[in-house]
Image (cartoon, rainbow, N blue to C red):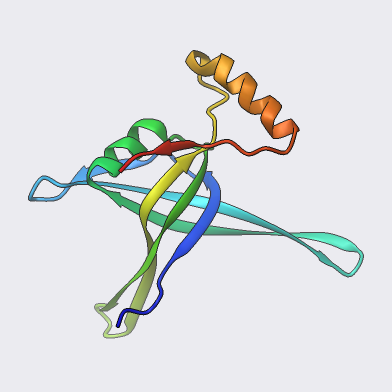
Length: 137
């Protein structure tokens, strides 16, 4: 029986996505996102930022590379994958990566081609409604 391994995270892209191909020709897109958290502590509001590495594969990778750019808001649904290895000094290392299964992008307000849609999205945000551009996979 499989255990549950699922994550939903929202944030902004730290840099432009990087698209590569595996030796067999499968597309792989990697990007990092920053997720902000605000919480009350004593009498002030505290802020903490987490940085997370994300990878997408095949058609989803191509779409993320096309639509993503530094600063754009993104929502990622996927699973966690842990890589483990021993370094040259013999010490164990590990890294956790999010493998995305579904990606949604916030409206791109900087893109002039989408200005009418961006204006609608901005009005929806002011009213408390969140809108996302869904990337099919």
